[in-house]
Image 1 (tube, rainbow, N blue to C red):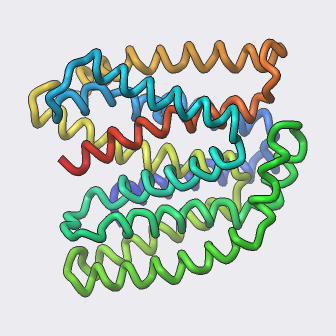
Image 2 (image 1 turned 60 degrees about the vertical axis):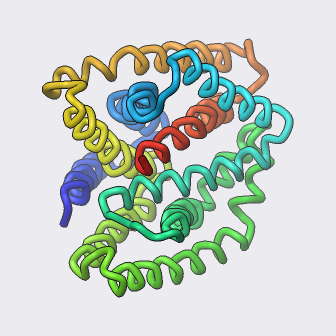
Length: 298
């Protein structure tokens, strides 16, 4: 069991005991728990994109922010004109990003390694959608601008992708062991970790289930990689320096997210809160995923 699996197991145990004690956690409480965890760990894990990119590439600060915001803006425009396809694109980008981050601890030096990332990521994302399809359909149907996504959750494509990606993931792990990119012990560790993720997606509401994965496996892994790298290049000396670096962009993200969500809740924007959150997360995810891909491959 690796460190991420152990932390994840502890988090599952804590949430499970909360459920056992209270019987059921209401939707508002789910939002409160998830928001708190994402604010503390989820958002900060992407707040060092500028430092990570500029430390590995010869470009100016102005050029970085111009390109970063340009990519986010183009994606935002796409959401306005083509929300259905923008959402599908978000799922694909997220799948690749999660897969690349997940296998970043291994030295995968072969041309088709991108296939490993997308296969594992699709397995993760289709598991989330497949196991929570009823809840997703019910939630999406409740809001006027998310109804269009219900067909994605109810479509047989999701279930078919789940089984296909499961089969491909098994083959992929066996291939990695055969080529000695990972050990047999690593393979069983990956299977065990995925089993924990699968159980989480199955047992808990989707908000809680995804937050547990996003925070305690994905964000923690990214923050750990960033900390090790910045310490290696002598950008920081200790954890306190690291936290100090996380604060500026994290606060900026909190501020703008709050303003936009407030505008939605008070009907200044004709967009439901779930749609607003989805757009914000996806628009941030695209340039962040590109930066992290550059970080892992340079």
